[in-house]
Image (cartoon, rainbow, N blue to C red; front, side, top):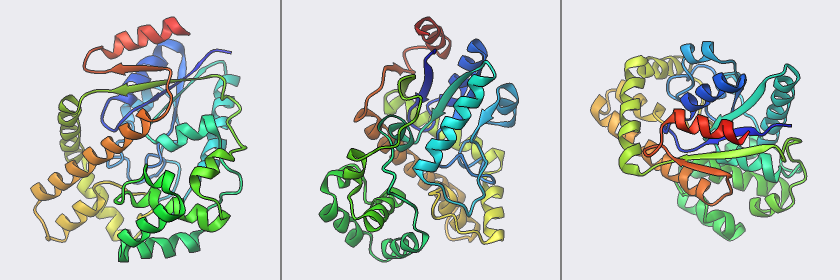
Length: 302
């Protein structure tokens, strides 16, 4: 069986466009591996592939969840395997693409099957975080010092998930990984490609993309969520809080954009830290090589 190319890297680096170019060359279809892009109704703010891109190449696991729904890593792993099986059965090549490191890690190392989502516990932890996130972070450090080193105190989603898993299983998340028993059936076929570059090259791309997102209707997207009064705290949608403050006339649009830009840079930094601490098969600095040359090199490998 051929390799399953899996393209990952920080936000704004060009994963989607590269995946589409590769898919066109190898008769491929793209499977999203992103914890935010799975949601419908926030396509602009989560930088989902555009309608034009979706029409160019079939995409899977993009915008298929309602905003008030949640999904565990184990459920996502099952969906990825099912999509891979379907794509291969039709004589096409699956390509994974995304920025959620935990999902990529789970494909290889597996998921501890005893860890389940507990909405009641999660809601309590979210409330505790909002009241005193320092106290909650110190709790994680005491419970799981190894994993606390990988989680920033401001990363609400990962911090709460780690504590939720401990409270539901009695086992720290770092130990959960060690006890993993459920892996992707295609674990031997994945070929991981990490896209990276210096911040001096990435940050202007992030800022340019933010301006495009605003022009495309990101403010209206946030306004729509506000009007429906949907709780999206479990998504950690970068830009929602900042644009909500703008719409409530608490800050200017310039201040809102600057806050979003800062949060996005911080998110990219966390992504790179995660990816650099894990294994990959090949890495490309996108400042030093064109996407067409990357595609040519990957085709030679396969």
